[in-house]
Image 1 (cartoon, rainbow, N blue to C red):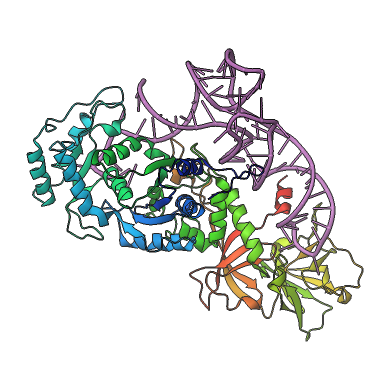
Image 2: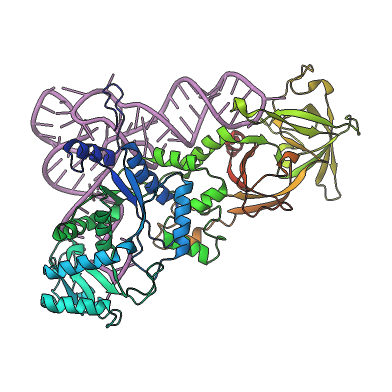
Length: 561
RNA sequence: UGUCCGAUAGUAUAAUGGCAGUACAGAAGUUUUUGGUACUUUUAGUCAUAGUUCGAAUCUAUGUCGGAUAACCA
């Protein structure tokens, strides 16, 4: 229970307020039991993560429970692969449904019985109209619908027909069970909604046992009721379904949870509908559901996001009813914040430029001590090699330094991180005039930690010793879309805004030798560059790193001015 | 066009009739052997009009704008 301290009263979102009100009145006996009800027809995305964190978060906060329930009432769209990925993603996010994993299909018998009960109470009937006929007699928001000519069949006839539907005597689309509510209702969902339809498809769990399947509106509320859910949290578009949710349970005379709707998450520069994400996968615009550019949970995981960072993100964005578009920079902030605390700082050079330290003895090798993570006192130190030949980042050298530039240039000095100060004496170029190497001199008395040189340099750059460097492939990601809201244009489809440079593969990157045995999923900060993790495709012979996110770059920002 | 929902800095989210606050983003600075981190400072907001009230972001009315909704999808 939340503490009621008047001095520092914590702020509650509107759902928590409803719950606390219920706890006050005792509506649900101070119980909180939520559920996360995905349809297994796609992979979970960051928007689902918001819902997962909400549902599990509410039950944690109020000492309640959360069920995982697959809403699998449409056999044509649902697959076992998705069921598995969903479980995996929820677990990875750090939540447990314990022994309460359910399927709406578990309740098909019960739901069928309830349908029969509705028929017996003259609250449902079998309609022989086609879906087109139903649509055309449904009326419109200002005009009442027309009652079906089959609306007044006898209870006995309805019961018989429904059983024969179940037995497979009729073809798909020839009959449907409809609730008998009000064809003139101002709420279109109350104009005799279809409750059951015939589908002669094999279900991923019940096989061919059924050829009739309940619709969402009928199955969902009954499933919630069966599971004794207290607060049935869903997204805004179900708001107009709530009267039907309540009608079904009340008409059946069974336990009724409270449906509460909140605004789904939208992120700029991305799309969030399963249909569109599926399109990106099917049309090979991305490689897979877990492509690191995808806003799917599996994509974010492969990209290097941590569960903590996603949970913190979910907390930060809050819960409300107004439509919202969250800035992706908030997601990026959340992952940087966490990775900053936990990752080891390593040396990696993406675009190597050879540096020869001409006054450093040829035979000499040193092991330099470097701290693993300045943000973590207990992280200790390790050593990195140093010798006459090293690689630095091409971006860290410019022949002539512009104003405000404090990296290396001809005649200029920089500190090599954890090593010496060097001065660039000359540039080696090939016939095309391209820079192939730098000749530098080091200051022996400027060694990191025992610097007596008295030299003051502004720039500190990273490097990798040349002989012991290991090669790696690094994948740099940028946002998938160039437009802030790619799916909000009437005249253009979202695919017209695909960023052609969303993936840049950089080969022959040079990394410090300690990374030789880096394992899939391990996360590092490449000093000064960003956070990287070992990709699932990485092998011993071909190390592959994904860039999760860059570091904030004040210099890049300065240059844009 | 009906019904339902919503509107607080650029983006989100608090304040539940009593000082409009927080985070991200933006700007400036301090520290720094990461142009990172941390820290400091700063810019910027109650959709409009009227009403109720000693007092309104909050209550009421009207308007404006935005969203959802008329699948045998969920």
